[in-house]
Image (cartoon, rainbow, N blue to C red):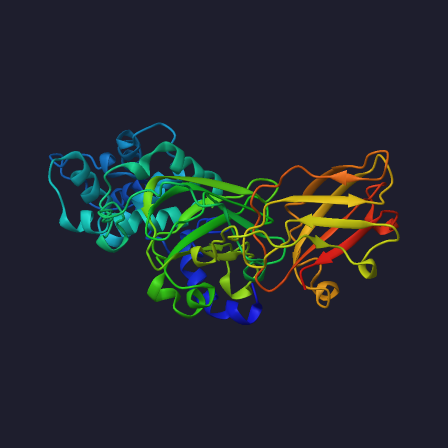
Length: 420
C-alpha cells in the first residue's frame, strides 16, 4: 500500500504487534518472578526450625501449580508455554503469592479479581507464544471455553437480528492492486453483500512464509476512510489471527455468520515480520465491499489489440470488451502465434501510458490467465473465464508466450492490450 498512507496504519498495527509475526517470542523479563522452593528451604535452614504443626509448603511450588492447571485443560494438547505464562501472569496481575493462587484453584472459593483479569491474562499470553504454540492453543480448543473476557472484546453477543444471508452469493472480492503491497493478493469468497450476513473464506498470497497474519474488520467507509478513521471504524481489539504457510499463502474459514454493515465492510490484512511496527516491514492489503464489482448491464464492444503494442502478426481480441471498474467475464482469442505454444496472460491496473512505469507491481502475477495451446493455424481461444475484477483506473492484459520459460531471453510472442 502507498507508503505515505501507511504511517497512520503503523499505529494501528502496533496494537497487533504482540499477536503477529512470530507472535512475539516470549518476553519473560517483565514477568513477575515466582518464588522457588529451594530458596525458601535454604532460608529456613539458617533460621529457627519451622513449627511442626505448620503444613509443608511443597504444594505451593510452581510444579504443583503447573500440574494443577494442566489438569484443568480441555485436552492434552495445550502447550506448556501457555500454561506457565497463565500462571506467571495471573500471579503478576493479581499480586498473588503462589500459595494463594493454589488455594483458590483447589477450593470452591472464587476471587473477583481473578475473574476480572482472566481475559487480560489470556490475551497477554497469546501474544507471547511462538507460532507453533499459538497454533497448538487454537487446535486445543481452550479459547473456545467459557473464559471471562472483558466486555470490550466479547463478540458472542453480536446482534444479528434483521440480517439474513443473500439469496445469491456475491462474486469473490479481490483487493485493488493500488491498496496492497507488491505481490500481495487477498480474496474473500464469496464477496461481502452489504446489509446481509456473510460466512466464507479469506485467503491470501504473496506474503512472507510462516508468518502471523492479522485480519481486522472495519465498518463502512472505503480504503482511505480506513486509514484516516482506523480507531473509530475498525475492530482492532478482535483481530482474526492466522499464519502463512511455507510459500506465503494463508486461508482461514469463517463459519459463524458475520453481519455486513449496510454502509459496507472493509478488512485489513496486517503483518509484522520482525515484531517491530516502527520498521514498517510488514506487507499487507486493504479491501472493501464498497469495491465489490458486478457484471455490466450490457456487453461492451470487443477490445482488439493494437499493432503498435504487438509483435508482428499477433492479434488478440477480448470479447466482450472490458468495462473498467466492473467484473469482466468472457473469452480471449488470438491469432498469429507459433503452433503448439502455450499462451497465457496477466491482468494489470494500468494504461498504455503507465504500463512500463508500474509493471510488475500493478500486475496480478499471482493469478495468471490460462488461455490455451496454439493450434496448427496459429490460433488460440480460451474457455469462458469466470467473473474477474478490473481496475477502475484502467485495465491492461499482457498476453503472450515464453517457449523456454525464461522471460529474459525474449523469445516469445505477445501483445499488450489496454482499455485506455
